[in-house]
Length: 129
Image (cartoon, rainbow, N blue to C red; front, side, top):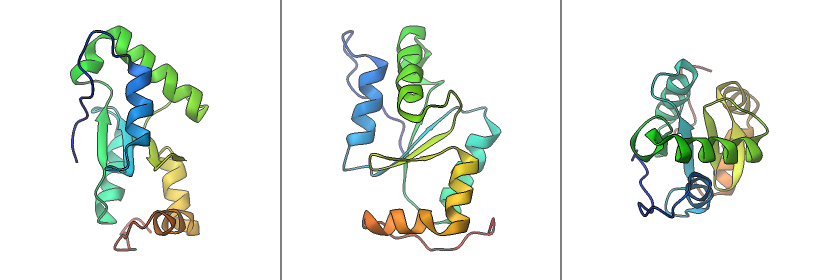
């Protein structure tokens, strides 16, 4: 897991960061999160239990402490997800969703199928199951 810090120039915008993170083939699993959020923590725990390596972007740390950047990032995520809530999990450019969506996808096999389609292996088990 790594905290994302993309272009630090003044021209960089939060919405660009979101698009760049989702499109980054070096990090096919990206979780947008808040450090204090219990659903975000639950999603991180679920991904860890599955043995998945993922990138986490905390939208209440680093460059996102600047209100303009944070607001642009949140607005772009809302455009992409049709949701104002966090966490939001992407595998490649495909939205899995928040914790409830991710857990449901684990339960019904869609998460494993999506991972497999992207060539990502998990340990396939979770104590949350």
